[in-house]
Image (cartoon, rainbow, N blue to C red; front, top):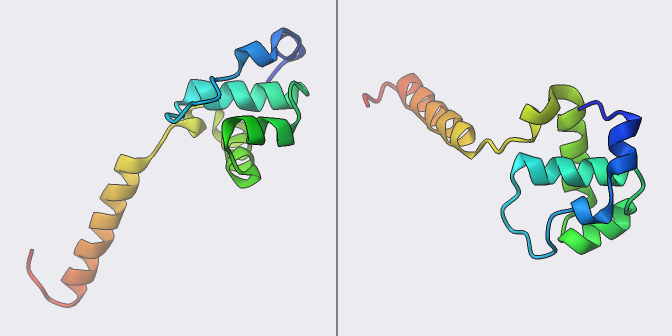
Length: 98
């Protein structure tokens, strides 16, 4: 996600998700990435405030840079399907019918 200077100037700590956020939708993740990019707040403050690890933040930042807002979407369903596909492929290699 490319963030222009206008967006950075408009970003404030009031744009951050509530402290008790447990459901991290892409809009909330983007708000944290944009705010930290603008220096409001620092990475350490944002992680402490939102109970995030620096690894989580870095993953969000890299995903948004590489894929834009879509990179911040959760992929539980996709991961679940790929896990099932891997298990099915393993069973096929062993000759076990599904």
